[in-house]
Amino acid sequence: MPTLLQINTVVNKSSTGHIAEEIGQLAINNGWKSYIAYGRYERPSKSTLIKIGNDFDVKLHGLQTRLFDRHGLASKNATKKLIEQIKKIQPDVIHLHNLHGYYVNIEILFNFLTIENIPVVWTLHDCWPITGHCSHFDYVGCEKWKTECYSCPQKKMYPASFLFDNSRQNYSLKKQLFTSVKDMALVPVSNWMADILKQSFLQKYPIEIIHNGINLSQFKPANGEHIKNKYQLENKFIILGVASVWKERKGLKDFVELSISLDKNFQIVLVGLSAHQIKSLPENIIGINKTENVEELVRIYSIADVFVNPTWEDTFPTTNVESLACGTPVITYKTGGSPEAIDATVGIVVEKGNINGLVQAVKHVQKRGNKYYTNACVERVRQFYNKDDQYKDYLNLYNKLLHND
Image (cartoon, rainbow, N blue to C red; front, top):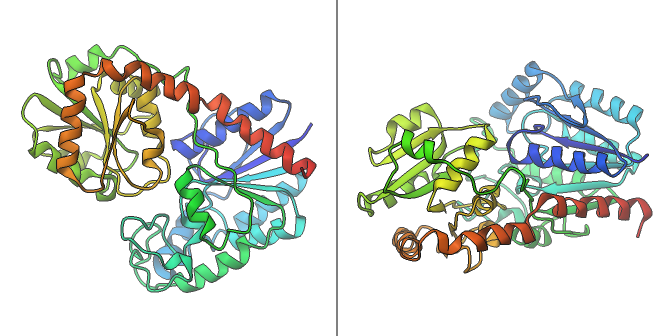
């Protein structure tokens, strides 16, 4: 029985945690033994879980990051203990996801991976592996990652450092560590990310694009009339936005500007806001706290007339696909991998920052009516983003690496 070990910040939580969990489930169903090593926020899992470090380790890692800008270089004892467990498990394939998140030491981990020569699959959910600091650079238009990072314009953004800027040293060390593994395949989750990797220091590795998939038994059109009643949304054209963390780069300011340009027949609803953000919203926007209740989220997607995603940087937002699966068309900015799930039958792509373009796109969807798009939205996800189909590509990749095909 082959053995898979995945490493990610979280398990069965947020987009990357759910992806790792579902890959593990598929592996188990196909005769593999599955382990998931994670940093925090334990959730139930079909895989055998390995907790990396503890809350104190995470806090120390966070402190080192804030003071010295050396994210990924704390958690030494926690990572050494992980290595000992990996040696006992003897996995046939190690699948990496997000290594940032204050929980693992990349130097210890990659020195081990280089020596042991275990086949590695690395899913790139963002750009942190190829930069000296940031997880995304599109918002500020920085291209230093192509040659060498220095004087980082996003030093105080995640993973924030309030004192030192060590982006040059971080970049050099990542380049050395991440190119030392002999047998590694990269999996960008979008065509955009694949193009970025081809320009980075990881360009020597084989690349296989696997878009994120979703669970179609969960995400599908559903009745949400009680939600309409709760928020008095009857007879309104509902414009929905969803994010796990709302910041300006996710388009929060754009939604506020959009609300000014629309009359009272339209209602913007934003999900995933903090209590403080909800209080600061203008009166014409309804704010809802973040929910881990998938059924509730599905019903919210389903009552919306259009899903708007004015993100200024993104690798491949799963929210776009979730909305389509619930029969709701998508309007998004032309940025990163966000437009890749969209074609003319299921939504509209607008130039980044073009609020008037958003207004016109919303009114275009309103004129056609939500039902014009419903069947095409559901069918597009069924055809291209069913997790059962998407994650089979990972199993094929594992087998390919094991047999050196």
